[in-house]
Structures are given as structure tokens and as C-alpha cells.
Length: 360
Image (cartoon, rainbow, N blue to C red; front, side):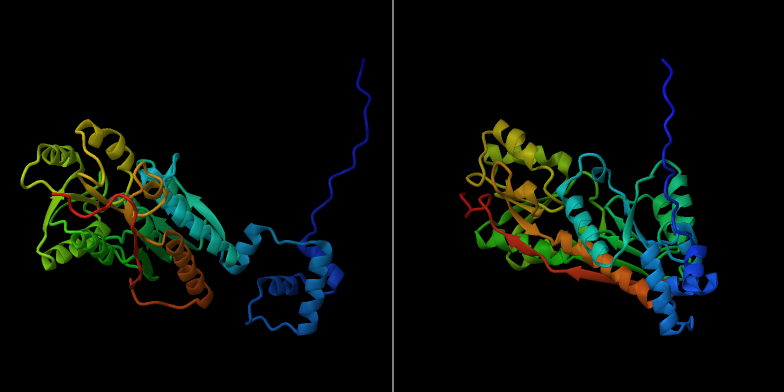
């Protein structure tokens, strides 16, 4: 049986630029000037209010491509995630940073554009950045390749680097770049001070699996070493791959074995530490080892042994990155050639069940 044809109502047409001009009795150029809102465009207040009233009545919104062409701005802040952990099963560090970015972008009425194209060659990333997808970029992560760094630098956009500053750029910049991080050196000091106050004098500082040479790691180690020297404590720097050997020394009761571990890069190792390494050698926290980590997210708070940790204000770091860029873009200011401005936010120590007075 053939289907009976039914008449369907045509889709409503979007209001156009010309519709606003006609209804308001002004030229299309005047509508453009009102919509861009530039102070240099001399439009009387009466005309501006009349045009805006029609814009509201017709529910008119300029097409984004046209608006970008008129203003030279997209209204978007790009977010570049450079660490593998930022994709897929996102860790609490990136969740905290991104939460702050999205929250503050909302306050400034800015959209965010997520850049994830880090394929070999970074051609897609290069095209997006140079093609004007965003007005500025927040680069989040502690894994930088020379190629990605070069792409970001050559785009010549205002950039805020979170956690890791780039190396000295060989490509000249005509706009500044900024950095936002916690006070890493103070964090290193806090962790060691807490342990030495508990009587620990042999402490292993455990590096991570990815970013041992990153600037933030070196800053934390510098703070830890300075504090250990002041307290006449022995600090042993240990790569992650050698950690099990140190745990074995603790289990064997070696006289030079540490009584505490400070995981200076983060807390991703805690599950493996508490559920595998320590039980394998019959060790208990904090009876045999005191443990301190960095970041103090839910990974430390809800570990099988709630873990003492240096807290960095992740959400505030993300919010600060957006505020810096939004205020810079609003000011339209010129800047010193390649200027570096770094904001460091304070850290704190959250004491939990993983630390106790030295037991040997």
C-alpha cells in the first residue's frame, strides 16, 4: 500500500544580518558595528539600543565565521593536553586542572577547544593552531616533545603552560607566554619536614616513570634536599625501576635502608605499592615504612592506606590559567619579546594514616 504524502511545515529560517538592518532602519554596516561592540565605532546610544532590541526580537546571532572575521577573535581558549594519562582513563590531576579551566572559562563567557591531535608529525595540531581555532592556548602536561613545543611556539599565540615551562625558544615570539604551577620547592620542603619531624633520618625520594627530568620534579627535589641537609637527614634519590630493590633492603633490615618514601612526582604508584610490592615482602605502612606523596587527590585520600600528601591546588591552577589569558586578551596589550611570567600557587600538607614516628 503506497504511503500517503503529507505536507510538512518548512523549517523556520534563521534571522539574517539584513533582516536586522531592515527592521531597525539602519545599514548592514551599522548592525556589524553594534554587534562587534568596538568603542572606536561611533554609534549613537539611541541607534545602538534600537539595533539591540531588534536583535533580541528576532533572536539573531551572527554566524561564528562571520563574527570571527569581523572581530579577529574566536572567543575560544584552546586546551592542549600533552600527557598520555590525559586521554582515556583520565587521572585526578588532569580532572582537577580541567575542572578549573572549564569553571573559569564559563565565568569569562569563553568556550574551550580541546586539542588532542598529537600524532607523529603533529600536522593536524599545526593546522588547527595556525588556522586560528582559538585566541590563546593552555598547555597542560609534563611530557613535551621538541616537535609539539615547536608547533606551539610557531603558532605565536598567547600561551599559558601548566606545570612545565618550555625550553628557550629558537623561534621569536611577538606575544608573551605565561606559566602557572604550584610552589614545587615548598612542596618538597613540606614533605621532608613532616618526615624529619617524625624522626625519620633515612628517606628515599622516589622519582616517577615519565617526567623525572621535568622542571617541576627538579624544583621539588631541590626543596627536599635543602630541608634534608638542614635536618642532617640522608636523602636517597631512587628511580621508579629501582624501587623494589629498596623495598627489599627495608624487608631485610639493612642498616642503610630508608624508613620513609617520598613519591615526589605524584601518587599513581600507590595501588601497586600497597597491593603488590609491600605485601610481597611482608611490609606494612606505617609500621615499617612511612609514605608521603604529591598532589593529594582522591588517589591518596582513598588509597588502601590513606596517604599523607602535599596538596597542590589543581582547580585554582586551571582557573588562574584562564584568568591570565582572558585578562590579557581583553587588555589587548603588547608585550615584551618572549616575556616569561610565572605564577606559583601555595601548597599545603594533608596528613593521613601513612606516616608515623620512625619505628627503628
